[in-house]
Image (tube, rainbow, N blue to C red; front, top):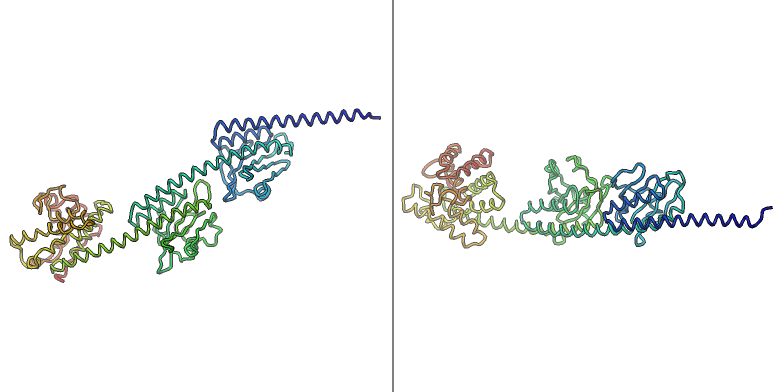
Amino acid sequence: MPVRRSRVGVRKKEDHETLHKRLQGHEIQLRLIQEVSNASMATFEIDSLLAFYLELIVREVGASSGSLLQLDRETGEVIFKVEGGEGAVEGKICQDPLPPELAAPVVERGEAVLNPSCLTLPLKAAGQVVGLLDLKGKRDGSPFTQADIDLLLPITHQIAIVMENARLLETSQRKVAQLNTLMELSAILNSTLETKEVLRRAMEAIVRLMECEVGSLLLVDEEAQELVFEVALGEKGEQVKEIRLKVGEGIAGWVAKEGQPLVVNDVARDARFYRGADERTGFITKNMACLPVKSKGKIIGVLQAINRLNGRLFGQEDIELFGALANQVAIALENARLFEEVRTTFLSTIETLAEAIERRDPYTGGHVKRVQQYAVAVGEAMGLSPEELEHLRLGAILHDVGKIGIDDAILRKEVGLNEAEYVMMKAHTTIGAELLSRVKQLKPVVPTVRHHQERLDGKGYPDGLKGQEIPLAARIIAAVDTFDAMTTDRPYRKRFPDERALAELQRFAGIQFDPDVVTAFFRAHADGKIRSQPSDGGI
């Protein structure tokens, strides 16, 4: 018959073993916590830290492999930060959907999922799940148990804090960088009033600020109620610009119709997606953020950021940032539109003035328009900047404005001028310069008007300037003005054919005309940008 004391002895032995195991567990736990703390203080490079933590956990728990994942709260996706153990891929960072069997218990309820061959623990910071620890089968074949969960819980808490702090730091740094970029882009956008340049800079701004592959802008054609692409996408850009969407058609059309921003992180599954652009260009649209561009409460276009880089997706924060950029684009476009209206009105006014003066001479019909066309063609062939071309255009329109002060008897004389009359005719250069100098906006073209009758050899008027002393715009107008004079009828001779006029320009290159201007003239003529248009002999 067994004695009772022996049972007590067995119970005491079991208590001692349980206590020993608990003490061992606490010892391992304390060591893990200490190593995690030391590593956290040694470096704050998140991927290195996470790799160290995982290696430590896999070793102490005896798991075959494991991974640490970070949860993107906004999109609900998990990002594999690091893997360790058997079959691990060094430096693996990818993005995958979380399996449904883990999403609900681990992410939504913050519970551990325990199976004999795997263990998944939530990483919690401030009561919220910020990541996951996933461990696979033990090396010795034993199952995962509650003891493993108890061992790892304090460590997972510390890892979660480190992971969340790193996320907050990264978010803060990104926001500061984005705001700096936004302010910089705002200044760049508003540093020009040329519509085409605004559009180009807007596209660059989208790609840079939204960290995406492509930016696009579609403007609303109010009359047709269509959206028109105003961006070129690489080699297929011209094909894209031919595409027109009805308001309401495609994702951009929906945004234009509803006036609301939209994020679509899988366009292939969205019934609103218009595939025509991709089919024409071979471009593959994966995801996009799309916003309306509004001016004075009215939708004037739609901005798109397409294909987010670095494996990330578009979220609400991106929409807010994109909205700030869209406001800047709207302001820049409105300013460019107003400037274009003023510019067009201004050009129309001075063209009308120049044509009114030209009508006093019945033998120079259309001269101003032709000189303007020829001068711009030569300027483009010489690679002049947009600003230089604009000043050249104005100088060409106004080069003979001084004839307003020349007597009709001289202007309309059908035979050659005598010496006194020629002196009076030459005064049109100084009269024109004097008149224009009183208009602030026209002061840049005053030298062009004054010196368009100078010669390279110094035998021109009014100041006898030589070579490079003569403003380039004046040298250009001198050549095109002479070409037009030679290729239109005069009362004392018939027009020259283009070939003869070109030969004359070449003959006097380096004497009367700038050789570089003559070379550019020949190039523009060969390209078909200059063709003489004979006058009809009167108005």
